[in-house]
Image 1 (cartoon, rainbow, N blue to C red):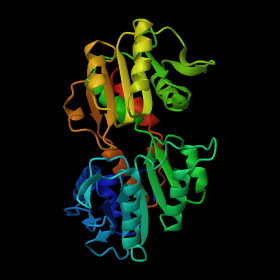
Image 2: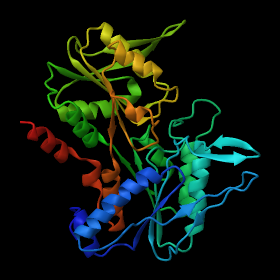
Image 3: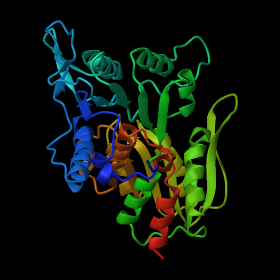
Amino acid sequence: MSNEINPMAFFQEPSVADLRLLACPGAEELTDLIDRHLVEWAKSAGVEKDSFIIPCECPRFQSGDAKGLVKESVRGDDIFIVVDPGNYSVTYNLFGYENHLSPDDHFANLKRLIQAVAGKAHRVSAIMPSLYGGRQHRRVVRESLDCAVALQELQTMGVKNIITFDAHDPRVQNAVPLLSFDNAMPTYQVLKSLLKKNPEISFDKEQFIVVSPDEGAMSRNMYFSSVLGCNLGMFYKRRDYTRVVNEYLGDSVEGKTVFIADDIIASGESMLEVAGNLKKRGAGRIIANATFPLFTSGLAKFDQAVADGTLDYVVGTNLTYRLPELLTRDWYVDVDVSKYAAYFVVALNHDMSVSSIIDPIKKIEALLAKRG
């Protein structure tokens, strides 16, 4: 079998087992979008399929205890469970109070659904776009390493593949060296949406520069600068005895469009501080990119930053829950990564190599070449 993925014809080739999807509570939107791609590809191959999704839920008792419930047979199926640990909009009642699901709750729901299909499904894979506990990626003092332990727990439960996106520190996979762990970067999808938002943007190094907001984000920003052929700058934190100062290293940003990429916008304080610093250095337009646009402190500060010219727009993805009001903002560009995730499902369902999916350099080159 060729390693080239032909999603429209994958039903005509032997697969590991029948493909089915499960959506943990809060991951229904992304799962539905993945399913639409799969159904479209199936129909193109002459296979009529209304949906690959198996209905499931994680109901709770009045005491707050819960269980995982899968409503159709999964015997012999290749199961892909989608979970969004960052979706804080899901609620449940506990002794008369309304509680919001935390990342801990979402991870518990994932384990409940794994238990519900264990021993029956042919294989179980987890699509966890934002890694549970992924921001706690190293031990400095006496502290927990939740993500590493969670991955080991999933491996013990029989999960065979984990697909994630833009992991805060992909070295966490060292905790489970025998488990298939794929970390994908939505670089192509971000650039495609960026060009759709602003077709006239120039990536010439005299007009465009990529800037890393800190040392930890250097690898993703280096990739952007490499594929775009532009220069790279960075901020680093210099600590003296009284405060932490952000220092800039790199070429002048004066009059240039500056692109800043990070994995998460939480409160957004760091991103806005970097943007303000760059504006003081004479930067032209400033574009922020975050794979997971959480905006935990709301949108008011970003509204103000756009209004006063500190920031032009933010590019985020639908790999996690987004505030409904965020999707109404003119300064926000929402990137659909569901097709990218569907490619992984197709490849794994056929035991195909995913190396060409993880490194989309040819697609990026074709995208840039199309512009002339």
